[in-house]
Image (cartoon, rainbow, N blue to C red):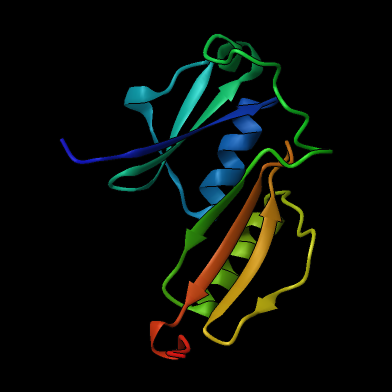
Length: 135
C-alpha cells in the first residue's frame, strides 16, 4: 500500500466545511464519509478528514484547540501556477474563507493564506523550482 497522509480537522458545521473544501478543489469520497465525518480528497495519497467535534473527540486525548483564536497547525497545498493559487483563493473566499494576510512573494515561491470557518490555516502556494537560489 502506498504511503498516505490523512489530516484530521475538528469542524463545527460539517456541511458548510465540506462546501468550503470543495471550493478549494478537494473532492468528497462518500465511501469514507457519514454524518460525523467527510473524507475530502486532495490527491491520490492526501486526504483531509473533516470531523464533527464529537467524532474528533473520540480520537483525541486532549481538548480540541480553539483554532479561531490560536494556531494549532499550518497546512500547505502546492499548485501548478500562481494563477491556480489565485483562482483557488478566490473560490475559497467566495465560499466563506478569510485571508488573514497579504500575498507573500519569496522570488521562487508565491504564497497566500486562507482560513476556513473554524480557523484552520492553509498556505496555498506555487513554487518555481528554476528560481530557487543556488547559493
